[in-house]
Each structure stands twice: as structure tokens, then as C-alpha cells.
Amino acid sequence: MSIILKSLNERLSIARELRAKGYGCSQCVMLAFPDIHNLTENQAAALSIGHGGGIGGQGLTCGCVMAMSTLSGFMSGENITDKPTTYKKVRIMTQEFIDRNDTVLCRELKTIGKRPCIELIEDTVRIIHNNLESAG
Image (cartoon, rainbow, N blue to C red; front, side, top):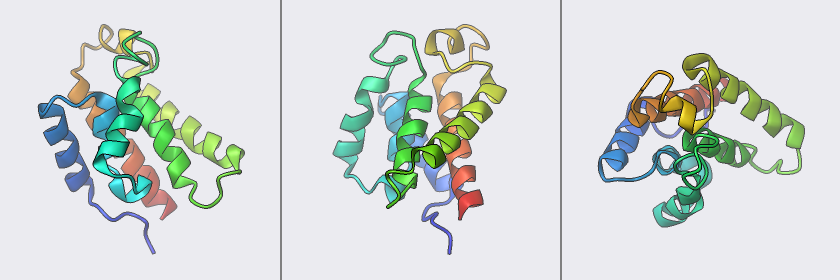
């Protein structure tokens, strides 16, 4: 049985719609996976708001990657004490993000390839979705 309740296209549509409404990168990613975190929209948005702009606007780790890491914890399910498994998931998905974008630092992402944030959001949604699909 697969744990994916939404299709990739549904997740991408949710993320795009939220970005158009002004939500931050991390919020768009988090809110595209309600079936994973089981939080209300307001709770997920509040949990991820501080990730924006590279952790509170500092240009550090991209909010997309922060959301990916947060969702990895939820993907651990009942096994919340198994840090090695969660860390491995985070490393695998982070490396895929780096392979696509060369870095995880927001300030570098905004200058290296000059890719719009929506493309980074979409990349991240795909990475997480594909990771779920391979786990399911």
C-alpha cells in the first residue's frame, strides 16, 4: 500500500497556487504534503514561516530544504526515535537538491542560476514526492 494520497500534479498545483498568494518557499512545500504531516493549513504554515529567505531572511539554508527536512521527520511515522533512518532520508533528498541546484544556501541559489523560487519549490516537491513513491 502506497502512502501517497495526492498525485505529483496535485502537489505541484497546490504549491504554485500558494506561491501566487505570497506564501514562502517552505510554506509552499509543507502545504503540498498535508497527507504526510496531518497538520491544519495554519499549523503547517506557522511551522514553516521562519524558514523563509534562508532561515529568517539570513540567506542560509533554503526554505525548501528546511521543509524537506521537516517533512522527513513526519515521514518517519511512529518510528520517531530512529534518527539514523531519518537522517539518511534527509541526506539523500538534500543531495538530490544539490545535484539539481549546486547548493542549499538561499543567497547562492538566488545568484548562481538565477532560478526563480517557484522552480526550486517545484524541484523540492518532486524530490519529496518521488522519495515517498519509492518508500511506498
